[in-house]
Length: 196
Image (cartoon, rainbow, N blue to C red; front, side, top):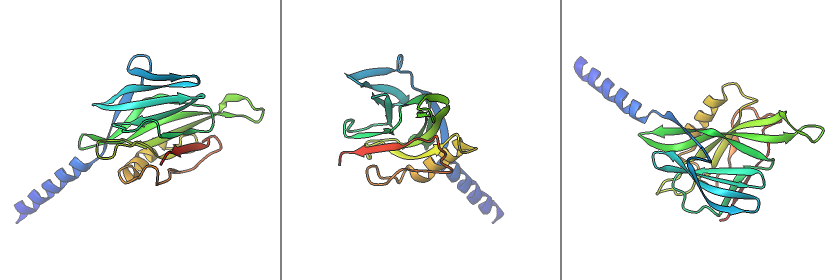
């Protein structure tokens, strides 16, 4: 009986570890690992290397950026960014379960104006943006939610929690992304457009 209980406990532990999420990191290098496929007056779009065959789709327009992840079917029917001028960091944290990515976390820098209308380092926002990763069964990637990295201690842990709790069940174009944790004055104004 004791041997059977030990065996059951071992199998449960093995099953739980196979479901445990982990993080893997990649870089966006617009000059070395991205191919620009569209250029227009106020910006450009690029296809970048991501995690093990899951690409990164980068777009910029009017000094505002957008990033989508995975096997996205349509690239032209969606825009998610911030109302303020912004730029993304170069490090992507992929949340992985059973060797498959289901969420991506990327830090955005939001260029807020101060009380004099100047864009300064002191008024710059930092927001961790959590997105879904598209695959062939769900070929759309979108923002799940946000964590204000300036207003929250442990912002990375909050972003991982958001990814793990929401990304796999989030319905792009229907569910609304929201902030997790405190939202400070520098978090910017997220904008989202889906052509349904």
